Length: 244
Image (tube, rainbow, N blue to C red; front, side, top):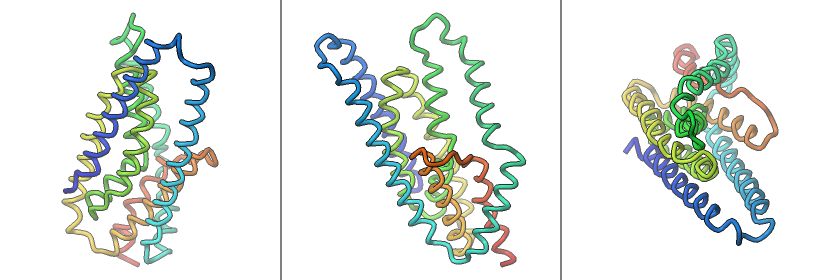
């Protein structure tokens, strides 16, 4: 049952992409009869819905962070993880990877109005490169807790509607990347779970949930935290719990 969260996330992107493609087709077909201001109303609805989802993500992060039992481990993990992540500059490396993929796939859609490769790459980076995907998949494999991936599914489903409407069918193919990426993390974590005690899993969940809080604050445009540079902190409780 460890892949339930990943399966739901995959299906949400497929459904959202199909909805976005349908809405784009309907808008093109009936653009002449749409009432004035309907596009702006849609943008306002999209904004308020995304803000509501961000608040739900914030709630999940706060509730998960309360599972920690040793605040000193959490503090040390965040500090050391931030140092490691910043020295490696994971955020910059991920962005560079995205730029490289974009550059080497641009020729595949030359001469085409709708870039399948652009839609696939853009959506895959959005849905896979982030703390929520990593933390959610880890929780899925370590504890069988799907709540983070369920929340991510809702967020990704809404986002995929917007992306598919503007970038086309390539967004739908990003569901494959989500299933493989999160599925592999969840399966590997499930094999690791028997080797970890309850205290280690609790501290990893606490640190990962704090990253989800940071992600939600970014979604609300309150901060610009480089969450990817904090990801190493998730794994440090494995070592810290040996001495503390």
